Amino acid sequence: MSVTLKNVTLASGKTTNVSIDGEHITAVGHDEHGEIIDCTGLVLLPGFVDLHTHLRQPGFEQSETVLTGSQAAAKGGYTAVHPMANTMPVADNAGVVEQVQRLGEEAGLVEVQPIGAVTVGLEGEKLSEMGSMHDSKAKVTIFSDDGKCVSDALVMRRALAYVKTFDGVIAQHAQEPRLTQNAQMNDGAVSAELGLAGWPGVAEESIIARDIMLAELTGSRLHVCHVSTKGSIEQIRLGKARGVQVTAEVTPHHLLLTDQLARTYDPVYKVNPPLRTQADVEALREALIDGTIDVIGTDHAPHPDEAKQCEWSNAAFGMLGLETAASIAQLVLIESGKSSWERLVQVLSVVPAQISGLATQGQEISAGSIANLTLIDPKARTTVVDGGASKSNNQPFRGMELPGRITHTIFKGKFTVRDGVLTGKA
Image 1 (tube, rainbow, N blue to C red):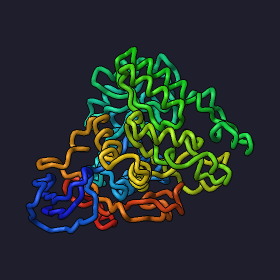
Image 2 (image 1 turned 180 degrees about the vertical axis):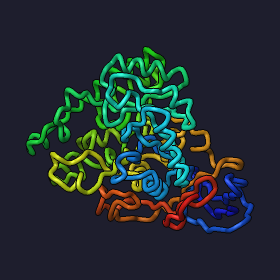
Image 3 (image 1 turned 90 degrees about the horizontal axis):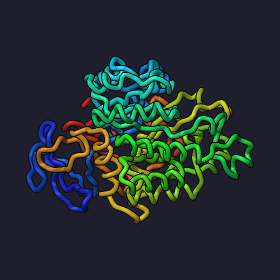
Image 4 (image 1 turned 30 degrees about the vertical axis):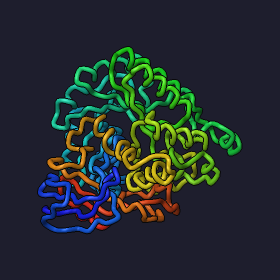
């Protein structure tokens, strides 16, 4: 593909032309060649990278497949996603992670970089084949039992020490299981009023505090998944102040939604960790702005209708997130007037790529860089209507008007989304 994106606005606010030939950006400036696309009013950013996606394949194809999840990712402006290991079979060996990566290559819409399990079968007891997964074609660098916590401190210490040998990362789902048995929502005034079993913030915060100390002890890299409470932020801030190699993510839904939505008894709002209070939401937003929280991870968790359209206590935990994440980031960082497009690039693209080691993602928009790019119309307003390109429909933002619209996504120099429409394989 030879194309010039004319009159794009970069994150810095500069307006320029960006020319692409093949997989690479060939010029940033006034040169024009190939097809000319007028991008006046559009913001051009490096393609987004999601450190926390559930693509469900293999084993749960009724919820999502690598193809349909890749389509949702492309529609959301993503050029790379990291699918979690809680598939069936579990991605705890080289064979499964290579299968997932191969399915991603066949879909051809985004870079699919699998996350491997920390323990065999996500059972929290025996370490998985992390070394062989790292040495495989999939080149796994991030390991997580997401959906479950590595609650045994000795197992967690051994995992952190092991991945240090190849500069890997352990991504922890921080949830003390003994404190959350049968929990249904945030522990607080609303849970007491509704009579639903509460999920205390300390269940998350205690594991984060422990793991930061273990990361400090081992000198290893720790990533905290889906931070949801003010207390968790305080633990992460203290760890960073001590020089511990800890990074953290927040989901779009924890930046916007609160436990008050449980009053509807609509299971679309049932998620792990649960939606918290408005005070927690405000603390998470400030932590994202000031850098205590490093990235936005979608925790895109598709489920079929029968798993969500039922009574609350029997419903599955999880929400969709890939197609709406950029809009919520714009709402929190830009529309609030508290931050900038440069910060949005950091949390959606640059830093997640750095954490996972994806060298072709999150690059500066400059001549010679791989053309993994996203164009946004920042003035557009979109009312969320359904699950979008995902195979599932558990969309928590349905009916909400959100700012911004992804108009184009470019993966390795080819359009995967053009004028808001999927174009097929890159």
